[in-house]
Image (cartoon, rainbow, N blue to C red; front, side):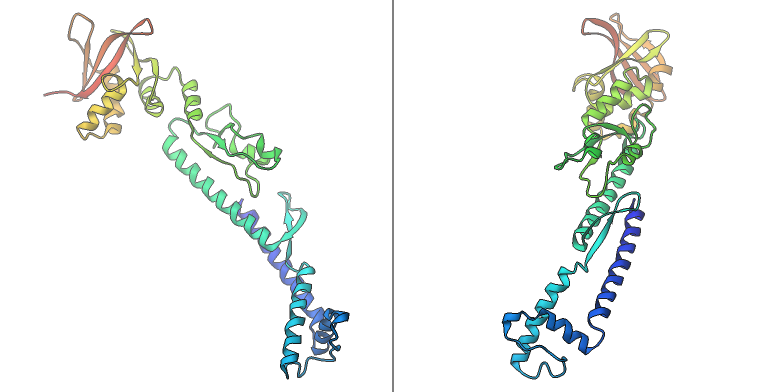
Amino acid sequence: MQNIYYSHLSRITTIMSRKLTAYLRTDFSDKKEVAKALNRLIPPQSGIKPLNNITGMLSSEVDKKRWQMLMKRLEQDFKRKDIFTVPYYNKAGNVVRHVKVSTYAEMLARTLTANTYREGAQDSILKQFGEFGDLVEILGRSKVDCSECRQYEGQILSLTGKTKGYTTIDEAKANGLFHPNCIHSFAVTDRVIDEYLKLNQSAKGQKAIDYLLLKQEGELKNAFHRDDIGNIDLIWGDDTKGLKHIITRRTQQNIDTKEFLSNIAEVIEKGQLVRTNDKGRYEIFLNGKMAIIEPESINGRQTFLLTAFKRRKA
């Protein structure tokens, strides 16, 4: 995208140079031509005599004032001739209108800044959320009636096409999204996270842990499975049970929770199972870690639930 604008800016610079050179050559090729140009600017009612040439024009204060007045008029004439308007190109490279250089420069600055922000945001999102997917929500509201980008406001799109079934950012751009001066951006919002959870309601094992860490609420049924006791649910919970309880306790012990939880599925599904009481409480051991599984009733449904995960005592 930046290359398009840089290319157009180069063309505009060339056009400006050509226009300015032609104007100066036409009106100011020699002193007589300068005098003619100035004479054309002298108002008929001003009482100022026409100039034959500019030699000796600044010989008195009167001539200085006349020179200043004429140069002011010359400046106004210069602006009226639209020397500093430039062509505005569409994506196809066609001129659609002419705009002031200042207007174009402001548009260019805003557009390049927005594009740079979006590129940085995409890199950050993919780095942080790439393991879940590449979905984002389009943010911003157009103040003008722009049907090209308005159709995508509030929509969830795929940054790279990794998450199937969604319009990609590139497809949306081809239809007009993120046009010059476009105010829209994107981010991972609550709606995006909800979308991930809808897509992964049956997430299993370590992926179930990752998704609940992302959402930080709710539950995932049958997140783990063991042949000896069956399915095990995972809940976000609170400070007394569930994943939040595990994170709270390990944080209090200054343990890196992300690293600590990285093999929780392996411990639950492959560890040694030990029943600790008649109520169905189990401890599962593997590689110095212990998961605690207990029977729970969730919304009237009996299930096994992960309630704790910690280092195994020697």
